[in-house]
Image (tube, rainbow, N blue to C red; front, side, top):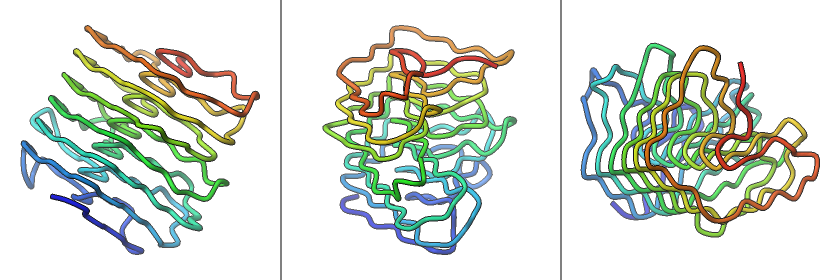
Length: 231
Protein backbone atom coordinates (compact mmCIF):
# COMPACT_ATOMS: atom_id res chain seq x y z
CA UNK A 1 0.00 0.00 0.00
CA UNK A 2 1.44 3.37 -0.98
CA UNK A 3 0.52 6.99 -0.22
CA UNK A 4 -2.57 6.25 1.86
CA UNK A 5 -4.56 9.25 3.09
CA UNK A 6 -7.05 9.03 5.94
CA UNK A 7 -8.87 12.23 6.93
CA UNK A 8 -11.80 12.42 9.32
CA UNK A 9 -13.73 14.88 11.43
CA UNK A 10 -16.04 12.27 12.98
CA UNK A 11 -13.82 9.52 14.38
CA UNK A 12 -11.12 9.89 17.02
CA UNK A 13 -9.42 6.53 16.35
CA UNK A 14 -7.48 7.16 13.16
CA UNK A 15 -5.26 4.75 11.22
CA UNK A 16 -5.35 2.29 8.36
CA UNK A 17 -7.68 0.58 10.83
CA UNK A 18 -9.44 3.04 13.11
CA UNK A 19 -10.12 0.55 15.90
CA UNK A 20 -8.60 -2.91 15.58
CA UNK A 21 -10.28 -5.58 17.71
CA UNK A 22 -9.36 -9.18 18.42
CA UNK A 23 -12.99 -10.10 17.81
CA UNK A 24 -12.75 -8.78 14.25
CA UNK A 25 -9.38 -10.34 13.38
CA UNK A 26 -6.77 -11.94 15.65
CA UNK A 27 -3.75 -10.60 13.78
CA UNK A 28 -2.34 -8.32 11.08
CA UNK A 29 0.69 -9.72 9.27
CA UNK A 30 2.99 -9.04 6.31
CA UNK A 31 1.67 -5.55 5.63
CA UNK A 32 3.81 -2.77 4.13
CA UNK A 33 2.67 0.85 3.97
CA UNK A 34 4.89 3.21 1.99
CA UNK A 35 3.57 6.60 3.05
CA UNK A 36 0.47 7.24 5.17
CA UNK A 37 -1.09 10.58 6.14
CA UNK A 38 -3.54 10.64 9.04
CA UNK A 39 -5.53 13.81 9.59
CA UNK A 40 -8.11 14.69 12.23
CA UNK A 41 -10.13 17.88 11.62
CA UNK A 42 -12.94 17.41 14.14
CA UNK A 43 -13.87 19.35 17.27
CA UNK A 44 -13.59 16.76 20.03
CA UNK A 45 -12.37 17.92 23.42
CA UNK A 46 -11.54 14.32 24.34
CA UNK A 47 -8.59 12.32 23.06
CA UNK A 48 -7.46 11.50 19.54
CA UNK A 49 -5.56 8.27 18.88
CA UNK A 50 -3.56 7.84 15.68
CA UNK A 51 -1.44 4.92 14.49
CA UNK A 52 0.14 3.91 11.21
CA UNK A 53 -1.69 0.59 11.32
CA UNK A 54 -4.31 1.10 14.05
CA UNK A 55 -5.55 4.14 15.90
CA UNK A 56 -6.60 1.96 18.81
CA UNK A 57 -6.26 -1.75 19.65
CA UNK A 58 -8.77 -3.67 21.75
CA UNK A 59 -8.17 -7.33 22.49
CA UNK A 60 -6.43 -9.97 24.57
CA UNK A 61 -3.06 -11.73 24.18
CA UNK A 62 -4.12 -13.25 20.87
CA UNK A 63 -4.03 -9.79 19.29
CA UNK A 64 -0.83 -9.70 17.26
CA UNK A 65 0.74 -7.45 14.65
CA UNK A 66 3.65 -9.16 12.91
CA UNK A 67 6.14 -8.50 10.10
CA UNK A 68 4.72 -5.11 9.15
CA UNK A 69 6.55 -2.06 7.82
CA UNK A 70 5.30 1.52 7.94
CA UNK A 71 7.31 4.27 6.23
CA UNK A 72 6.76 8.03 6.34
CA UNK A 73 3.88 8.41 8.79
CA UNK A 74 2.33 11.89 8.87
CA UNK A 75 0.13 12.94 11.79
CA UNK A 76 -1.85 16.13 11.10
CA UNK A 77 -4.18 17.80 13.62
CA UNK A 78 -4.70 21.43 12.53
CA UNK A 79 -6.44 23.63 15.10
CA UNK A 80 -7.37 20.57 17.16
CA UNK A 81 -8.99 21.21 20.56
CA UNK A 82 -8.54 17.66 21.83
CA UNK A 83 -7.54 17.10 25.44
CA UNK A 84 -4.68 14.84 24.32
CA UNK A 85 -3.11 13.62 21.08
CA UNK A 86 -1.62 10.11 21.12
CA UNK A 87 0.48 9.05 18.12
CA UNK A 88 2.27 5.76 17.42
CA UNK A 89 4.11 4.51 14.36
CA UNK A 90 2.19 1.21 14.54
CA UNK A 91 -0.53 1.72 17.19
CA UNK A 92 -1.81 4.91 18.80
CA UNK A 93 -3.51 3.39 21.83
CA UNK A 94 -4.22 0.09 23.61
CA UNK A 95 -7.68 0.84 24.87
CA UNK A 96 -7.81 -0.45 28.46
CA UNK A 97 -5.64 -1.99 31.17
CA UNK A 98 -7.24 -5.40 30.53
CA UNK A 99 -6.21 -5.38 26.87
CA UNK A 100 -2.81 -6.30 25.48
CA UNK A 101 -1.00 -6.44 22.17
CA UNK A 102 2.07 -8.25 20.85
CA UNK A 103 3.99 -6.57 18.03
CA UNK A 104 6.85 -8.48 16.43
CA UNK A 105 9.14 -8.07 13.43
CA UNK A 106 7.76 -4.60 12.67
CA UNK A 107 9.61 -1.55 11.36
CA UNK A 108 8.70 2.12 11.44
CA UNK A 109 10.72 4.55 9.35
CA UNK A 110 10.10 8.25 10.00
CA UNK A 111 7.23 9.92 11.83
CA UNK A 112 6.25 13.50 11.00
CA UNK A 113 4.02 15.54 13.32
CA UNK A 114 2.09 18.65 12.22
CA UNK A 115 0.14 19.90 15.20
CA UNK A 116 -0.94 23.09 16.89
CA UNK A 117 2.02 23.97 19.12
CA UNK A 118 -0.36 24.50 22.05
CA UNK A 119 -1.53 20.88 21.84
CA UNK A 120 1.34 18.77 23.08
CA UNK A 121 1.25 15.25 21.60
CA UNK A 122 2.40 11.95 23.02
CA UNK A 123 4.57 10.35 20.32
CA UNK A 124 5.91 6.79 20.37
CA UNK A 125 8.03 5.25 17.63
CA UNK A 126 5.96 2.03 17.83
CA UNK A 127 3.08 2.66 20.29
CA UNK A 128 1.75 5.96 21.57
CA UNK A 129 -0.36 5.60 24.72
CA UNK A 130 -1.04 2.00 25.74
CA UNK A 131 -3.27 1.53 28.77
CA UNK A 132 -2.85 -2.23 28.36
CA UNK A 133 0.31 -4.32 28.34
CA UNK A 134 2.63 -4.41 25.32
CA UNK A 135 5.23 -6.91 24.11
CA UNK A 136 7.61 -5.75 21.36
CA UNK A 137 9.93 -8.29 19.73
CA UNK A 138 12.47 -7.55 16.99
CA UNK A 139 10.95 -4.15 16.23
CA UNK A 140 12.85 -1.19 14.78
CA UNK A 141 12.13 2.53 14.78
CA UNK A 142 14.26 4.84 12.61
CA UNK A 143 13.21 8.44 13.06
CA UNK A 144 14.89 10.09 10.11
CA UNK A 145 15.50 13.82 10.67
CA UNK A 146 12.37 15.11 12.39
CA UNK A 147 11.28 18.24 14.25
CA UNK A 148 8.32 18.04 16.66
CA UNK A 149 6.62 21.09 18.18
CA UNK A 150 5.18 21.36 21.66
CA UNK A 151 5.85 17.78 22.66
CA UNK A 152 4.51 16.35 25.94
CA UNK A 153 5.90 12.78 25.84
CA UNK A 154 8.28 11.08 23.43
CA UNK A 155 9.65 7.54 23.51
CA UNK A 156 11.67 5.70 20.91
CA UNK A 157 9.29 2.76 21.38
CA UNK A 158 6.43 3.95 23.66
CA UNK A 159 5.42 7.49 24.64
CA UNK A 160 3.65 6.68 27.92
CA UNK A 161 2.53 3.60 29.80
CA UNK A 162 1.55 2.44 33.27
CA UNK A 163 1.35 -1.28 32.50
CA UNK A 164 3.67 -4.24 31.94
CA UNK A 165 5.94 -3.89 28.93
CA UNK A 166 8.45 -6.30 27.41
CA UNK A 167 11.09 -5.43 24.81
CA UNK A 168 13.02 -8.19 23.05
CA UNK A 169 15.81 -7.36 20.57
CA UNK A 170 14.37 -3.99 19.57
CA UNK A 171 16.31 -0.99 18.26
CA UNK A 172 15.69 2.73 17.87
CA UNK A 173 17.81 5.09 15.75
CA UNK A 174 16.92 8.70 16.53
CA UNK A 175 17.65 12.10 14.99
CA UNK A 176 14.98 14.30 16.50
CA UNK A 177 14.67 17.97 17.41
CA UNK A 178 11.95 18.89 19.90
CA UNK A 179 10.87 22.54 19.88
CA UNK A 180 8.75 23.90 22.72
CA UNK A 181 7.19 21.63 25.28
CA UNK A 182 7.15 22.45 28.98
CA UNK A 183 8.95 21.63 32.21
CA UNK A 184 6.54 18.67 32.51
CA UNK A 185 7.55 17.15 29.17
CA UNK A 186 9.25 13.75 29.40
CA UNK A 187 11.52 12.29 26.76
CA UNK A 188 13.16 8.87 26.66
CA UNK A 189 15.03 6.76 24.17
CA UNK A 190 12.80 3.78 25.03
CA UNK A 191 9.78 5.12 27.00
CA UNK A 192 8.90 8.77 27.45
CA UNK A 193 7.08 8.29 30.74
CA UNK A 194 6.70 5.04 32.67
CA UNK A 195 4.27 5.29 35.58
CA UNK A 196 5.18 1.84 36.77
CA UNK A 197 3.56 1.40 40.17
CA UNK A 198 3.61 -2.39 40.69
CA UNK A 199 4.13 -3.08 36.97
CA UNK A 200 7.40 -4.15 35.38
CA UNK A 201 9.41 -3.37 32.27
CA UNK A 202 11.65 -6.11 30.84
CA UNK A 203 14.44 -5.49 28.33
CA UNK A 204 16.38 -8.11 26.40
CA UNK A 205 19.00 -7.13 23.81
CA UNK A 206 17.63 -3.67 22.96
CA UNK A 207 19.64 -0.71 21.61
CA UNK A 208 19.06 3.03 21.24
CA UNK A 209 21.34 5.27 19.16
CA UNK A 210 21.42 8.77 17.69
CA UNK A 211 20.41 12.13 19.17
CA UNK A 212 17.40 13.90 20.63
CA UNK A 213 17.93 17.67 20.61
CA UNK A 214 15.69 19.45 23.14
CA UNK A 215 15.57 23.22 22.63
CA UNK A 216 13.59 24.02 25.81
CA UNK A 217 16.09 24.07 28.67
CA UNK A 218 13.22 23.72 31.19
CA UNK A 219 12.76 20.11 30.09
CA UNK A 220 14.92 18.18 32.51
CA UNK A 221 13.14 14.81 32.55
CA UNK A 222 14.92 13.04 29.73
CA UNK A 223 17.09 9.96 29.50
CA UNK A 224 18.38 7.09 27.38
CA UNK A 225 15.87 4.63 28.85
CA UNK A 226 13.09 6.78 30.41
CA UNK A 227 12.19 10.41 30.51
CA UNK A 228 10.42 9.60 33.79
CA UNK A 229 9.87 6.45 35.82
CA UNK A 230 7.78 6.34 38.97
CA UNK A 231 4.38 5.60 40.42
